[in-house]
Length: 243
Ligand SMILES: O=C(O)c1ccccc1NCC(=O)[C@H](O)[C@H](O)COP(=O)(O)O
Image 1: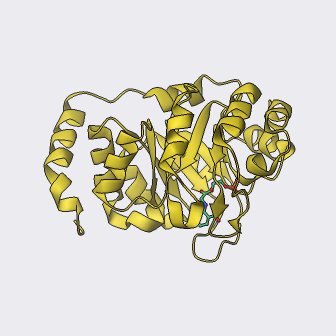
Image 2: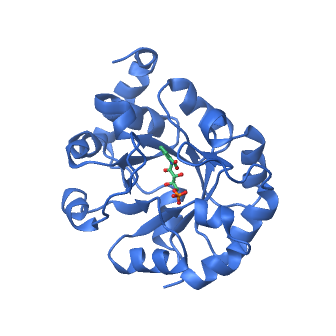
């Protein structure tokens, strides 16, 4: 285990024992996606590594309220301040709307898991490219804290670590973290690798038609950020995206 994660080893061991004794059921984030008319995770972010600041003055109450009116099943809220413009206060606003929240950032320390919990998130993004072989331990630790791990894959060689994590929420990010290029999105190979998981297509969905097409092509859910942050009327965009 890498720096910092050693202190979670007892929690991880206990969680492994618990999982051995009783199979885990779906948490609120997963339930919201599985039961949704519009299985969209609507993201609030002011900036991104690929674009820089593009919605610096966005008002979380106004934008997240529109996501609810449009029928989004869940929120994704950026916590990371430097590259995504995340602010703890955004979570306080998000909690008021009663939608399950994904804590988003480059989670790589136990402190991030604790922060997700303190900020009231139900789920936490774990990126295979960032965590490597530590991803299963982070997933077990997240569950031990009551957080649902959403494990993000970008390349096929990351699949074994995510399978070992037991994640029930599996994302495919079409965007390459190293050069921000966008690749293809085919749910087929992931369905074979994760037959029971909620498969989520992440990034690069430019409009309502792209969201509809992704859902029609076999993804169980999608995560959309920039298009919703830039939309003059995000509620209308979401309504138009309904299958
Ligand atoms: O968005 C980026 O520029 C980015 C760059 C490097 C790593 C992660 C990045 N974004 C995180 C995300 O996963 C997206 O915010 C999310 O999938 C929504 O994408 P989009 O709809 O394209 O805003």
